[in-house]
Length: 146
Image (cartoon, rainbow, N blue to C red; front, side, top):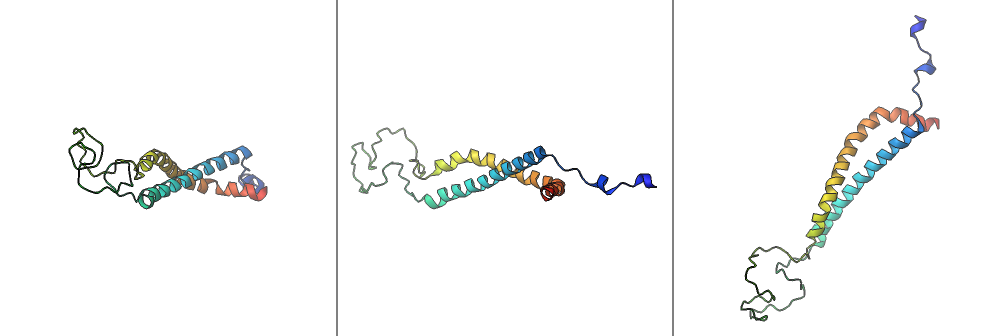
């Protein structure tokens, strides 16, 4: 009967190695950093696209200070729009803000970064709780004993 009982010292968990602790902390901080960074990038994108984007002109010219709103032919190309575009092959009849003043390019360029950071956020949220539940006792014992 005594052979099956273990002493208290044998039942204690081994203290994790310092290298394991450093790797764990590094991975945790890495994913936490990218999770926070992804939230920051999304907030900055929303602020740039929604708040800062007050350029509502849809005239596709790069001159935002054009106060010439009369309907006469000022550029001599036969039409009443005051742009210097003489080719009639431009069938761009949409009302998009094509001059790039709207800040949409920043949003498009940040989409790839958002994708990578979103994946990091998902990995952080999926890996972190499982690691924390499994290793929290040995992790805390290490700092209590240190």
